[in-house]
Length: 114
Image (cartoon, rainbow, N blue to C red; front, side, top):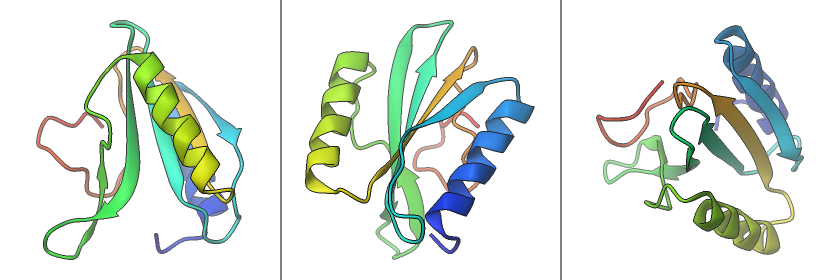
């Protein structure tokens, strides 16, 4: 992430709010270099997803879904495990009727919702 984590998270929340979604910081991490997890709750389909930043095969940064399930319990269990490993972790939750993630950077997979 080129921006400090707190600035990036603030911009993500603002984009979500402008788009009509609800977004909040569930856990605040390190302001400068904390890893960010973005949990999406699709309120119309009642499904969850989670995204985290990673490096693709070409070495470029991109956002991936580390958990392929859309069950909220499995997403929450993954997030709790990551919180145990990384005390600097940020967790942002977005609730949106269309299940959009509002991440403007490259997201793995062509079926990703913006």
